[in-house]
Structure formats: structure tokens, C-alpha cells
Length: 346
Image 1: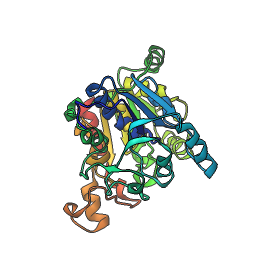
Image 2: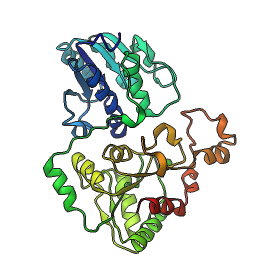
Image 3: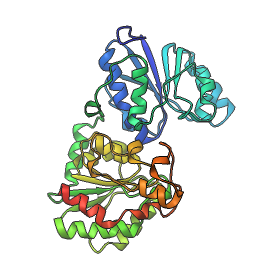
């Protein structure tokens, strides 16, 4: 199949997580550009759909994540209503792999064995080639496999829709000429910088640039607790909005901010999509895999150092997807590292 032979209907399957679905958007946009008459149905979950809502030309099929056998039977009944030319099976976990047999598609394309998990290859008919690449390029690999001339890195289209009302709300949150957003928590503690480091950076940023600091994040306990710890350690007041924003509000707020500081977490990619400079904090995984895409110049990447110190081998011997699972890896990032990057923005 090439870009000259457009399928009539493509299903793209990705239920989570926030960062991953944002990174998949350029692939969707590339397919739309190459095949404007092709119908695209994105099968996703209620956890991420509010972020994706408004993506033009895409039909969304929101399904629950199955927990029991009866849930799979319900999905089987749902999918009987659909007939796809191509299924892009872009999620590889045991629970999602078991959904694919219930989806009617002439072609079922999944990840290569290196990126596949939980017998993923058993549930697809074709697999994209293995490459050492950024996650965004991994998703774009499906478009490439289908024969589409994929865009250059600088031309990846990260489209996130926000309406005028939400944009107005975000602008109303600004209190000073410079607004610094900090999304402090990652989903795992090993990828999260300590509260005392954030507090020191916040105080220096406020004293040097008189900026407004806004803490962002979701309602999970680890995020709320970390934000509270940071706030208590700061010598200057911050706006703690952790757990207080809806999906589209966080999109608009990160678009309004002049910079974001964040570890390996979804809001990093939201900020990139909105054109906001990101100071990415990386040590557990290489930033080339999951760091801010298109604008990596502000990223602090201590992964090579972490590999040597905690894995006991040269960086050149680390596999592309290899992680440094050590609780002290993020401590390799210093407060001065972050302040230096901020000085290049402010």
C-alpha cells in the first residue's frame, strides 16, 4: 500500500497515556494530509479523550478499559458495527492485545518485537520495522510503513484544540509578565526530581526574574503531595493549581506559560504541542527517546552519567530503551543546571 492507494477507513488504537496520545497526533495529521478522503477512527479511553477532543477530521470511539471477560464480550459486540481496512494497533499490553481479535480489519499492524510486549505479535498480522528513535517517530513509523511520505522532524504537526473560552481563562491566570509553569511529578518516583530542588529553583527564578510560578499536575495523591511539599519549602508564594484543572485548561495554561520545567511526563509533550519552551529533566531514560520533541535545546539529560554511575557500564553500551532504575538518578540534575537553562529563556 502506498500513499497513492488510500484506504477508506483506518482505525488507530491508543487508549493511554496522555503524553503518548499527544505524540501520536503528528502521525494522524500526516495520514490526513496524504489521504484526505480516508476516514480515521481513533479508539481511545475516557482518560485521554478530553485532551484529544476537537482534533479535526477524526472520529473518536471511546471505550472502557476491559477488566473482566464480560467486558471483552461487550467490546466484541460494539466492534461488530465497524469494518476497517487497516487497524494500527499502537498499544502493546496484555489487556489491550486481547481486544484486537474483536476488531474487524483487513490489515492489523503493530509494533516490532523490540517494542511489543505481552505477546503483541500474536495479535497483529504485520509489524513496523525496529528503530532506535523518539516515541513520536515510533508512531510516525506506522505512516511510513503504509507508504506515506512522512514530514521532517521540524514539520511534525502537534495539534491540540482549545476553544476561545478556555484560552481566555488561561490568559486570566497570568499575574506577571513572565509565567513559569512547573509540572513537578512524573508517574514514577524514580523519574521525579525532589521537592527541595524545585523549591530552590522557584525561589531563584522569582528573585532573579520576578516571574509568576504556577504548579501544574493531576489529582493523583503523589502529585498533590509533591506540590504541597514544594509550596511549603518555597520562600516565595506560588500558584498551586495541581489537581484543579481540566484537560483543556492544562493545555491552554501550558500554552500561556513562557516556559515549563518538567521531568519525563505527559505535560512535557503538551507544552511542546503548544509551542512553549520546555526544560526537560531526564536521567532515568534518555531524552532522545521520550524528551521534548522539536525543541530539545533546553533539556537537561543526565542519562549518560546515570548509566555509568548506576548501571556500571559506558553509555555506548546502553540499549536504546534501557532505563536506569535507581532512586538517586534524578539527583544528578542540579539546581544550577535548571537555573542556567531558565536564563536562556528569561
